[in-house]
Structures are given as C-alpha cells and as structure tokens.
Image 1 (cartoon, rainbow, N blue to C red):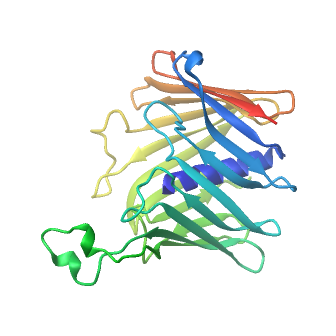
Image 2 (image 1 turned 90 degrees about the horizontal axis):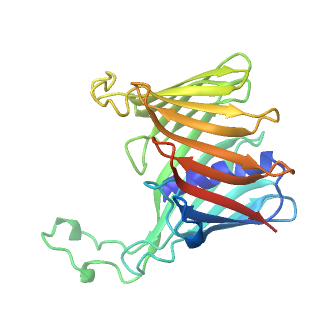
Length: 293
C-alpha cells in the first residue's frame, strides 16, 4: 500500500506540472492484445486542478509490478494536501486492514514537515502474541486506527529536500533517504538507508537530451553487491522532448544489456496519450492508453 502512495503522489505532481485539470481514465492491455483491454485507473480533479480521487483496479506498471486495488480520496486546506484516505475493496473485512490514511503537516513556509501513516484493522488482544496458535477469537472485536509510520522531512537553505527520516516507526527497513543537488538545483545523488546503513545509491547525470541515473545496491557491510549482476550498476536513462516531457525511459544492467524500455506519447495539449513498456527483446509487454473527458 505504501508503494501505491508513492506512485499516486508522483502522479499528482506530474499532472499538476502539466496543468492537467481534466478527469481521465487509463485503459490497459498486456502485450499486443488490445481486444482484451480493461479500464484500470480513473482520476478526477477538483475545480482548481488538484487530484480529488483515484480508483485503481488491476493496474500494472509492467508485467511484474502493479498497484493494489484501491479507492483514494484527497483532502486539501486551500491548495495544501492535508490527508489521503485509502479503501482497499478486495481486502477481506475483519482482521486484515481494508483502509489506511496519511496525514500531512507543514511548516510556516508551507514545506512538508511531517507525514503520518495509519492502518485500520483488528488488533490482537493484550498478551495474545505469546500464544503458539492464534485464532480469530484472539483479536479485539472492532478494528481501530493505528500509527504505522511517521516520516520527518528536512530542507536546505535553498528550500530543497535533503532528508526524509522515520527514526521511531516505519513500515520497512528503508527508513531514511538523503538527497544532494548540483548548483543548478538538479538532483545529484539519492541514498536509501536503514538508519545509517546504506541500502542503495542513485547517482544522477544530465545532458541536453535528458538525464540518467545509476542504481547501485549495497550489502550489509556497505559494499556494492557486485554478485547481483542483474541489479548491480543498473542504469536508468530518460530522454525528453523540446517541451521537457519524458518520451523514453531505458533500463540496462551493469553489463550494458537492455532490461526494458518505456515509450511515452503526448497529445497536442501536452497530456500523456499513450505509454508502451517494451521488454528486453523490444516486444511490447504493457500498454496504457489515456482517455480524457
């Protein structure tokens, strides 16, 4: 569910930057099988062009990765996002969580200062966790909201985000991220850490046609995982058009072999029209068609 949050926040920023204030749907099909296309995503905007709701049903970014089926509602104070509410309709009601929410807090200059994540589910009764066998009778009768992560953000004197840290409670081991920037404000490096232990590093470089970054994973001792040939030194390249829109993403491994490509087409209004993910053999694996109202 938290990967979903990252994905929807990225989409909100992307479409706001494109001045996209129109509702749209995404039609998806696997490979070249357009006859079996399905609607997998629907996004609606409010009167000032901010995302107000999203619905995902079977949405996949590629063959191997996707998003949980979820209904998300966005709540604002003026233009500041203050809360998102997620409902997972296919999760079984009762013990498993079928809802989550995120609260956003800002400083005096409207920079995101803190983010709190909660899940909604039934909890184990006190001292039950020490039993050998746990049954449905060992849970409280009613679900409750509980904090699952609390993220804090820091910025430099230029207003650039430099750290995201969750020192007390977090949903996985990657609880800290650090960012460095070039003099022109572009991202130079991004680090993912478990407190102070490096998990991976992205190193960014830019040119006239776009940018790329190299992703390197590290072992528990802080050494690059060179034995992970498929992941070590993975290179992500992005090409942009004259309007600054990303038109191609290419991923290669440390040996220079292409893993995948993603082609993005735009309509005359500068909105995304179609994306096609191609596999290592340059064969389409996943297509998304955007339909605007």
